[in-house]
Length: 542
Image (cartoon, rainbow, N blue to C red; front, side):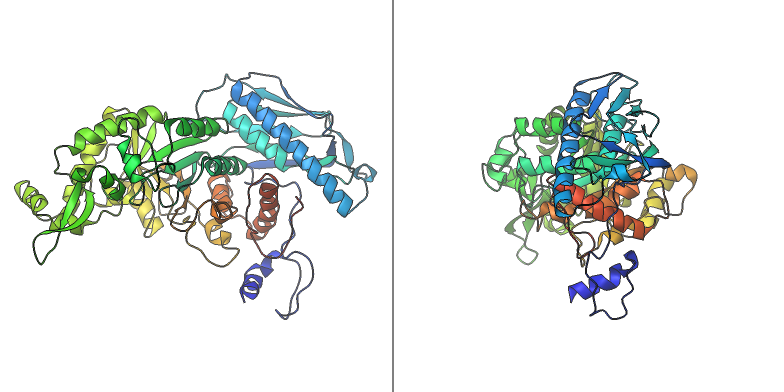
């Protein structure tokens, strides 16, 4: 039955007219494009004809500034061109066609891509990095050109260049249409949240995720590294946290592991933002430090019930511990921003604890546990500010009236996203959106459309309010994903969010997007990312 549901959803993306759902024509449900980039560029100027790229002689040449990031990128993208040529050769053997050179639109050969980086490389990606570029491939010369002011623009332009390649019908040679692309992102924060606390993910899967993010021009890896279920981060100052809080002593991320991930991300222009969610979502901390958590009491007996709740804001040892831990985190993760969480605090345990009730009475909190949370968050924000980091918090922190410093970023994840975005930006805070991009919310196949329908700037606002929208993130929570299924669960569904965060088109064609995503999913599969079929019946040559 699922197939017929898919058929009803997707028939608008095909040119085949079907009068009876039980009569199906052969072939893919959605015909993939050839040589169309994802996400859609800011501006594309088409020129007459197409060029042939011969991988045996093609080179990517540096004509401007250079650095380790650029040299690594040239190796990676040269390998991708070789891979595409290999696939084209296999596809040709299975489905031969006329040589491209026989067509009148053949405009010549592309022998090289000249890469001109104008400014010296920056060492680390950052919020305001310049990712714009100009890519020019046309028939006036045998050399294409890629120019950008920053290394981050060069990385995005190289990615786009490889998307333009398709089989030519001439052996392993590749074809690409003559065109000029002028490109820049709509929003500067285009992220993916990955949860490694509900299921531990091997380093190799995190690196593969970073590869896939680069193929989609996503630039923030939001690492939700710990939660109630486990504490896999191996602290050098408090090694007992992971020794007792991880699922297993071997299922941890050492400082060397973290540095490897950050360096791998750096080469792809991706920031790594860690999240250590408090005061809730901290039960795993209690395996080694039960004194920092709140003992919950039985309402009937007035005695402890043997369970632990969130961090105890009244515990004198808590804030020195938090300061030491977050000081270490600030050294381990060079990113300026840190996500502090602040969501889903279970107030019932606080309410059951007589010491906390007494503390609240003495501080005139009037049984408002939002006030107690606000006091904790305020102290935490003061600590992170003293450590020269900028905080991101889930929206409950804003909703509960915590006094936030102007640079704090509010992350909207639930409720009416339009009203939430409007309220946060009206108050003058920068904002991130995830409410419409929760990848753990599953529907039938082809559900990328619901993510694609989300416009991060579509809310009642002024120009000044929209300028406060930094971007957004697709969120892959880990309750029911591990290394066996995490990649097809993310891709190409997160690709829909990636395009809405990069592309400037406010009313994009879903039909055209379906065709481009069909091609892009195959592209990712060829590169080792097991992306699931986006639309329905079809095929990929790999």
